[in-house]
Length: 360
Image (cartoon, rainbow, N blue to C red):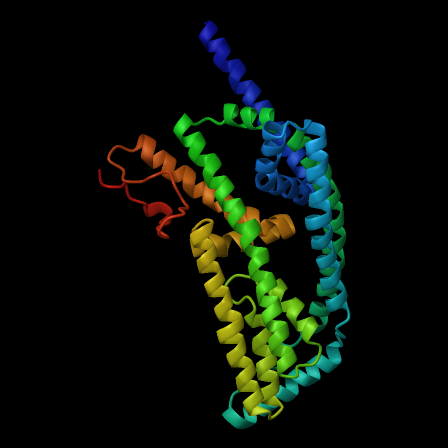
């Protein structure tokens, strides 16, 4: 009887915890970016906090204040400034639906005249007026949300750093896994967050600089505008920067500047696009080898759910799901060859659900 009552109390307590978690999550959803931002920064900066407190014997409050101040000055303010730069750049682009539709029709007519097929019709151009207003509304709400969530992230980061020991101990304590799986989970989470939080800005900045140099050299008007757009589109799976350099090259071809159009397309494909492949390969070797499918679907899902920080936490959620599946197979299915890992820092052998046990 006591065992039955204890089991009943446990089920009720877990149910209440889950219920309150869902309610709080629902109400705080607009501010999840701030929570995720603070968590990301905590993962990246916890080592600095430990060193200041345990090696140099600084007070926790002073250490956390210095780290938060440095983070605000060198990460959050530049990031917010970049957001405003993007907003200002895009808002400075004249979006005249009538002119855009006229240009697209003229381009379609020239293609039809040369190659004999129609690209656009009045019916499939109807989206243009709606797209212009939708882009501007999304832009304004996105920048204001970035500022609010940035402030939330600053406050949360301070308290997370001050309580870094108890926070880590509590998290490890409540995880319903074996000690080995708890260690693997923390290492995988840290590895994935570091890979995205460091890799994405490095790739974006590098491609933006290369785009600016190329467009300046080829005489493209407003090269800074297009360089900023290239940097922003690096987070879009598969098509990425092609959304910028392909239309620029095609536009030059449509205007009759064949050689310049070919050079612009070649530069975009080989230099801008090629740098993306090289940088991601190098960063995967250095940080974490995240499978391309995880990144692809994770970014799509994450941006829709969490906004900017979704580029980090979308892939993380999918990786955790696959990691838990591997843990289940490893621990509870006799004869399974699965290993509880998703990423690896050696040899690029991440295999999602098909990692094999190493031969003994």
